[in-house]
Image: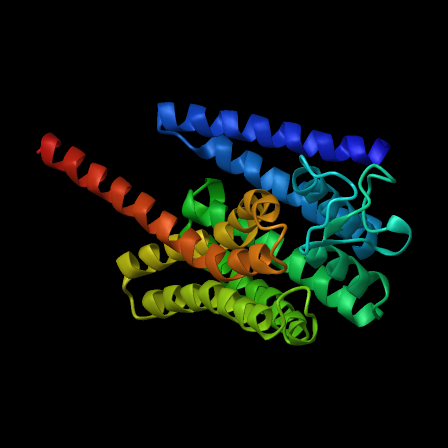
Length: 288
């Protein structure tokens, strides 16, 4: 139950984070909300590296066990839920014995898979987590990132790490066609799509700055940031709602998250950017 308590702490952190979002909206300042989200991301991803993939996945599944089992009797059938061997795929012990089919498949592929598959996951999480941090340092123009040379250096480091991180993700995705509980080929091509949104936005940003177009570079970096937030946080937030909603339809929830999270993240980022640019234009016009 100690690890189950850790899951409850995650829900507590989500509640605090939601409060920070409300505070940020009222004050029109999102830095605290963003840095809390970065720390939260590091905490979740570091568990995989510290405890190993199977334990990290069991904790991750434990988060969704809470919502997908809400109001569901233990003897009630749900096609989107199943059991795992020894109930080892969760941190809840015998509290929850049935889990999302995607979650059980996720756990068993790494618990029973080879080290190379786990290393791909570690590479993906490590590189993308570092990129997630660096992109905010770049976009917020924090401290030494104000220096043009340092900004350029951090950008190159970020792009190199992103290439490794997305490469690991694509390699992992290439195996998903053979996993029916993920959605088979639909999941495989969905993850290819997610990778294309993330990496494609970054490439467009690189091409813009190499052509000397700083404004287009800024715009594409906003979209890239949106794709990263979408792929990580929006994916997980959507799953919290869709998993219980579609627990009677196998793979529907996970496929919706795979296909929609990155483009939705880009759309939200674009809306925020345009709103900020419009306000900046209005302030400039008033000051003239």
